[in-house]
Image (cartoon, rainbow, N blue to C red; front, side, top):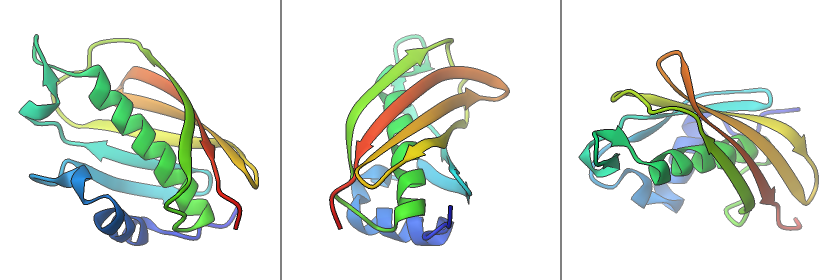
Length: 139
C-alpha cells in the first residue's frame, strides 16, 4: 500500500487542521510512517497527569486515536473528515512518567472503513491496546 503522506506532510496537516493538539508546547510528535504503520510520541506534562502522577486514561485514549488517524491519512491522503466511529481501549498497566508511544497498524483499509490496531507503550512495556474503526468519506 503506497504512502501518500510522509512525516513532514502529516505534521503540516495536523498543525493546520488541529493546532490544539500541541497548544502550549510540542507534546505530540509523529516519529515514523511506514507501510501500514505510524508511530506518535507523546511527551506528557502536568496537564496529562491524574492523581498518583500517572498519565491519565483520556490522554492515552487521545494518543491511540491520533495514531490511528495518522496512519490512515498517511495512506489515503489529507482527508480531514475521516472520523472515528468506534474505539475500544484496554488499559493494561500504569505508564512510567516519560515519553509514551502510540504505534498504529492498519488491519483493514477499505473504501469506506478502516480498522486499526494501536499499541501504546511506555519504555518497553505495553500499557494499553486499542482497536479503532474509522469512517472514510466518499471521494
